[in-house]
Image (cartoon, rainbow, N blue to C red; front, side):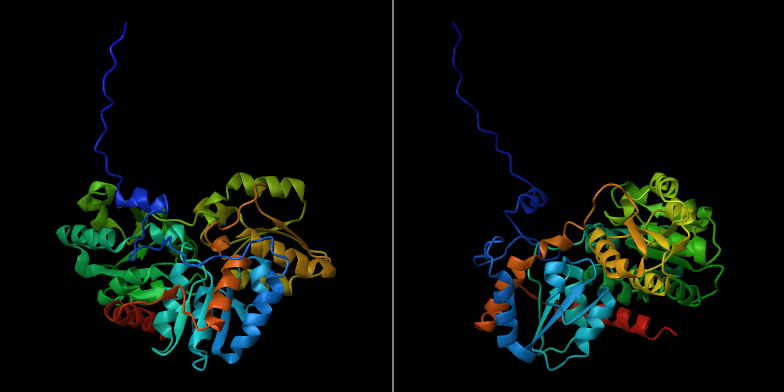
Length: 399
């Protein structure tokens, strides 16, 4: 006979991160958010397109809808302009008459739009859970700790931070406070050249945040550095996993971050598509791994990819290493010109957080605004905005 023992309840409290991932909490200083008040329309509602059109028409010039290239077609059809993150933020700033900026993208993009627009404009993100895994890989606390490590190593005064546009407002503000600049995938080389001009080039170091691959590819492919000039700072290891000597010897201190979409592409993907499609041109984004970039025929930003395909001759074949929504849209657009455009990887891979912006969220947002209810506003605090804008203005001043 067994004796029944009372069940002991363990006093285990879930961590803030666990609550966040479970959707039971929110972190205003993170790229992720989980609250979306109000009832969303059903995705099966056959009137969604008409409802979105009617609400947008009712708002008129009060609303300006921005659509990132990686958005679904169902959302892009309602965008007043499309583009990459920085182009869209600048487009928003150029429309001061628009009271509402609805940013169909992810959280850091909406933050940048808020920084660059007027105080009277209100930036709205249709789903607060539309974050960016890359931007999440560098928190303000982690980067502050990294700076302490650089200070203890005696190299902080030689370090110029260069942060990718795909970073939170907090990281942009850190960059501004420490004399650095922001870059895009289009002007990363010029941003690094500027950084090395901020002192004796032989002594200057760059802390590149948060995408290691863009930093490494730009340094090695575009500026003639070697892989040995680059070290990888891991925020989850003591001292970033680096010795003091490694920090002193390095030219590029790369943050251990990456894009979950572009990081999936491999050399095997490149070899496979070349075997399947003779004569194919492989064109990849510089957020891809260094070995993938080295194996490709062409490398460039989202805007570069679009322009390259526009200029491509009829009958040419292309394998594109970037987000699937854009690749599929380009394939459909240029099919009539007999341009064969395929996704570089056999595995379907959308940007999962970007795809959180769907038609039900957009309809809910537009209808709420049309009824006078401001929802999901993205607002950067004045102190953060001040220094983030300083870093952005340094980039805008680059020749």
